[in-house]
Length: 102
Image (cartoon, rainbow, N blue to C red; front, side):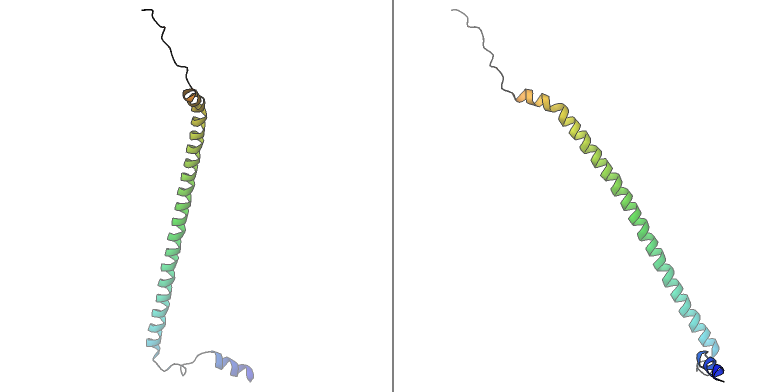
């Protein structure tokens, strides 16, 4: 007997709701549809954010590699011109003209 009493308490019956079944169906469907739409909107937002993060990560990596390449080229060029720079800044001997006898 107890099994039938617990089953009756857990399953809703027509006495649990006072509204007519058609109105309840409409409300439940509307609630479900709103929940589904909200979930779909959030899912689309999450996907957009994930795509944005992937794009930014890819772009950041691209610019980081480009900056590292530019720094390496700069270091190479500085090493190449360093000897020329030291030669140009070294003190030069003053050129003297031969003194002409007057």
